[in-house]
Length: 344
Ligand code: 13P
Image 1: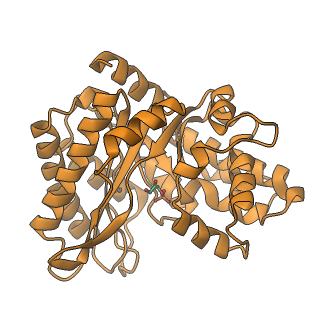
Image 2 (image 1 turned 180 degrees about the vertical axis):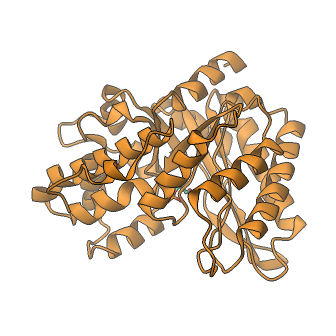
Image 3 (image 1 turned 180 degrees about the horizontal axis):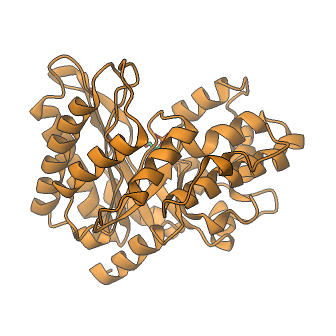
């Protein structure tokens, strides 16, 4: 596949008013989410939960693509249609998480390195046969005393670049996700410094691996205060610092930046994205979302594993997706939050 074809997929994923649903929780992560609502993480419950999300009527108006996990891309709806086809009927493109998780980094055990490169070329070809058009790989950068080290940033950037090159070789659009965690009491300035350092090294590695910038998407953290920091930056400051950081590090050839929510509250994640898109300053990329928790928390907490709650849970998901769609052009407002009546 050539750069133009990859670019067409990447551009469709960041089409105006649309963003990505990250529903690619690994077995360990979905268990944590289900524990929070006292539901056992069985294959049947995972299928029922994802079916509830994917069959939400009209959600394709706001969701351009969905990132799936290995188990999910092989699953079907109750009517026998593969989930990939269900999503296609919504107008949403299917993607796949291809990393094998973040593990302790040898010689720096407080830091993480993402595994999953071995055998990746073959796995990518299988995912294509299952209908995937794009991929995701998440690297984790931790802020703490004396960390992140240059060693950790470089090792993760190298893996991200190798993954991105292999994805493009296979004809899949890579979503490159270097996540600087918001865990800790660090300030927004510290997050800015670490994010800037990380993105410089990531784009340097992407360049040396001949990754086509036009045929990829970046999935970063926002520049934000640590979740235990005593001063929490308001959306306007998050927007200003985030856009400034990216203007200095992310080439204009990248079609879109699709943020992760990373533990922000639903409203915070929407308000921060909205503030970026409401800024008078022009930026060269689409600024969009690829949220997991910030899209799924309300439907998860409404669903509670009960078939009788599916309709209400879908309304909650639809509403959250609509709010984030509005944040794509800066038109989200508090009033929108109150539109959802009789749910919850
Ligand atoms: P969150 O939005 O919950 O951070 O999830 C996004 C994601 O895909 C993390 O890899």
